[in-house]
Image 1 (cartoon, rainbow, N blue to C red):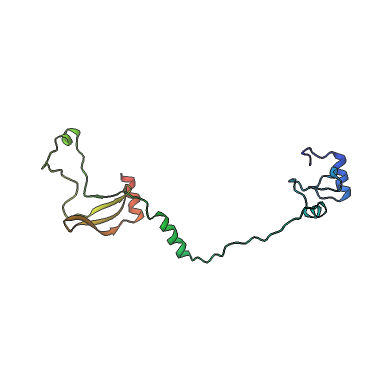
Image 2 (tube, rainbow, N blue to C red):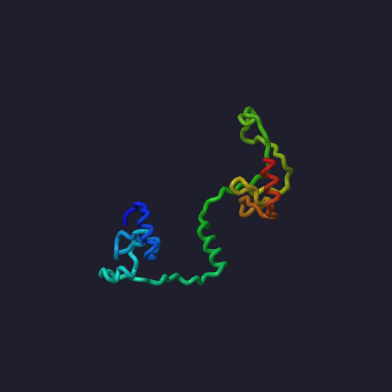
Amino acid sequence: MSNEPFSKEELEALAAQGMKAGEDPSNGSESQIADGTRRPEDEAGSGHETVVRTVEFDSFSGSAGSSVRAGMDLIMDVNLQVTVELGRTVLKVRDVLALGPGAVVELDRHAGEPVDVVVNNKPIARGEVVVVDENFGVRITEIIDQEERDVRAKAA
């Protein structure tokens, strides 16, 4: 099939013969579809056999809950940076260099106040400091809602 446009005579012949627009009248009895493939009825005489297969899809038997669980399994091994923030302070470089063993750094929170649990630099919860087998830990007492997270992000 040629990529050249049809001439006026070919278009008139096409309309007169009642042929489909995708066929090339210059090919005579052998016709092709516009994308260059042969029509199935033309293949029968050429010795080629057209095979038609039905599409088979896998059955969808999973429930929404199991697909969510499968999605969670994909991210279970992702590392997150978890920080517990007791408080903050601002120091000058000379004050930091003057720190040594036994130095006390005053924070902006009082003893006994809840600490912030921060995941990847975003506060997600508050809790209280506990001691477990001579190690420090945090007992979560409150999950921070989205509105408060947005307010804290704007303030920072």
